[in-house]
Image 1 (cartoon, rainbow, N blue to C red):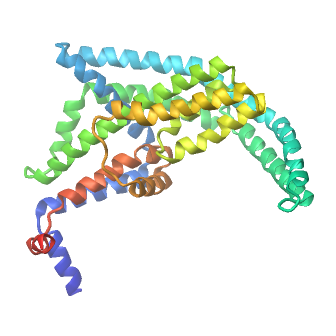
Image 2 (cartoon, rainbow, N blue to C red):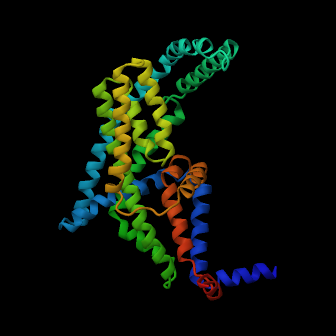
Length: 356
């Protein structure tokens, strides 16, 4: 107990550190215990945070806060309406078509598998190929049944969608309009002396705003460019595949590798080993290269200084806790942890040891 007491006095002697620890515990407890119930609120906060990046420039040009909010909010509603009318029906239709075409795709691929024992008799036998084909067909049928059984027509699905479509736009508007009022309300419950908390928030806010808004633009740009490319080649399920490619940028390193598989498989089933397939693969790889080497440096003015291992661990941990939003905010949350550790006061004796 004495060791624990000494460690606590060493690292928690500052009242501001205790305040920071309490705030973090409350935040994580609320998100973990009530995250699903508060998901519309949390999602609305994220959207309002994204749109704030468009409100600021309008205010700096002399437009009043209320007018700036209304302009950005109307543009946001128009964008959502276009997505609901133009994108969602197309993606839904293409998902259904793809699931229906899976059995024929599997049948077409069996020919290539059946040729393996003839070309590589020492490595693959006919029994192994037959077993593999049977397993693939069984998994395909089960996957198709699961996808088709998931329907937006269910009562729970309709209620959830109505909640999001009605409540979220209202929440986004009030979060944007009454931002200062809400911030002042929260400040009432915080102590006057909170230098460490303020420093950490300024650092994290700068990096998170750069990351989240940049990532939103990256998703939109990659999606549109990929969709135009797939449409130009005449690739089937262009909207669905381009949307997957756009959202794949959320997961560094892993997303691009995973989404490449369905893109190339659909192209191969459509064209086979033809020049069209090769040119599409080249164009897709060029898009991925431009995204990583040109678009990302342009959009992200400040590079998040995190080791790749830390990024992957953050994606696994936060994605396991909060699903999609955990994956989306894995890097900002890891940045928050890094900022807290960097700002945490080090005892004088340990500072001397570090210098030695």
